[in-house]
Image (tube, rainbow, N blue to C red; front, top):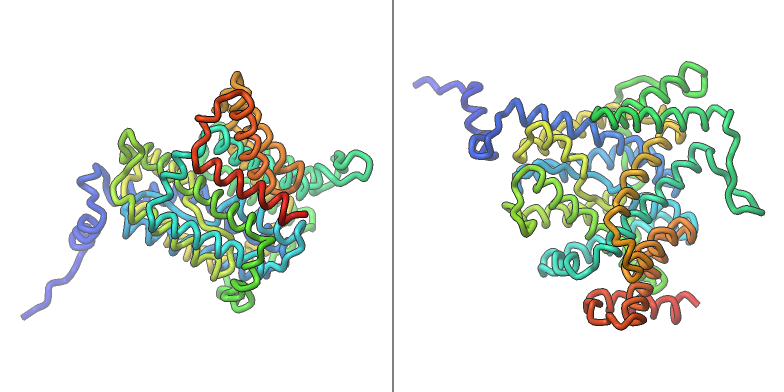
Length: 444
């Protein structure tokens, strides 16, 4: 008896069974296009993440590979297990917090700092398993959530300006304008405006185009050396499994661990709600199909990312670009994951990317994150004050943890001060008291 030969129809049937394409009003072609679109909007992370984590002393070539691997794994698992058009990758903001604050300013080794990320991710996973995650999101006021997001945006933007040489340190004024005629500054400024203009025209690959153009100019003027395009992936032995889990269990890192957990909580949960809502999958309460599976995937992937040697993993708001062109199922996310696997073989191109080439991307991310300040009720000082303090204290103290701490404490002070203490949720009160205890008894 001759065995039946599988053909396109069988493959279509398999994809239909796994992703329920017809039920979601989509096709294989539409999902593939959506996957490519999402990938183009977020592939910049494979160039940016190694640059940032490299500041902490990590092997940038190895980080390039682990960034691709964890983005691929997270996206594919999200697609298959949760059937959502949501991609995952190392989170912007948390990587800067890790490199510039925990390692750079606080002086911890990158292994210990990665251990803090690991424990923050474990806490994030426990919040998910015990179904506390959305209770915390609902309990923390918009002003603090916006303050945290915007503060991280300001912090990232400041790092972009520094990497490009647009701002430099100054002993008298703290910061000053750098040499605006230098090559790094010129290319950093050019890169940012390329992104801003293309994004304003709804061109999804704006960040990637900026990195390619600025790197190309650097190559043309002799500042960048061409080292090939394709090669076998570099070894990741120097970072995989090097996380210092025990060393991170230091009372001095408690606030950092909590901050990692809290930021990931807002970032990932908020993105899931936003993308599924745009895809028409979420109800009026923000709930969507296979929510449990989606929450488990992003929290487990975040924990695995720390072991692999990269900063916390989060769902990416760039997934909405794929949704905007018709992506409705997990096939979109699977396509994104497969493309990240292909990129692993392009490590020589990543080595060519200079800090000024990704500076524009950092400044642009800062613009996007800071724009959420428009949601603050500025006519209510009990809401505006903690939002402002949270946001500005992150770059001014060079510490995301301190910004969060002072924001929660100031929220309670303002509400109690005007007699509106009933508006303080138990969650906010507990967090504020814990941070106050840390400042009084641990930091000094």
